[in-house]
Image 1 (cartoon, rainbow, N blue to C red):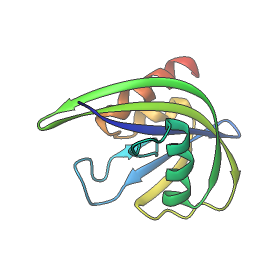
Image 2: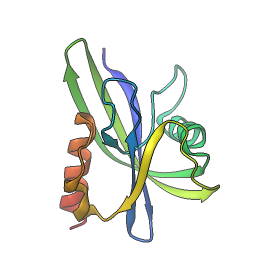
Image 3: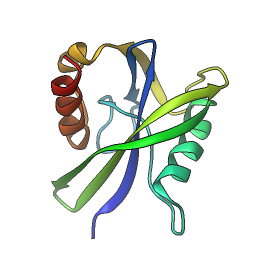
Image 4: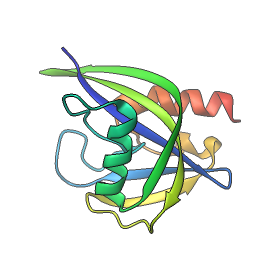
Amino acid sequence: MPTKVTAAILVRDGAIFIAKRGAEGRFAHQWEFPGGKIEPGESPEDCLVREMQEEFGIRVVVDRFFAESTHRFPGGCIQVFAYFCRWQSGEIRPTEHEEYRWVSAAELSGFDFAPADVPVAERLMKQFP
């Protein structure tokens, strides 16, 4: 059974928020659309609100579902549910990521994304050239 996680596609002034994972874990130092593991009994939308608050200190509003991606790797499988989000309040203060950027969809190809995030980035580049 795959581990189910969420990913926020946070857009502000035409730019997309991406974050570089820290030194810990399987996909260390790779870029991602931030989010996290869906807890038992939690909706994907509630997960995104919680994770963005915990990992960046900001409140977001989840707008709509965008894409799903599944990545299998030795010893596991991850299923990502990506949603468009809007920044509601707070200042970005990363607690687990080593870097973040606001980039255009066209710039996404220049970043080394975690494997499960690659299809999401590719779809964004196609839909928002």
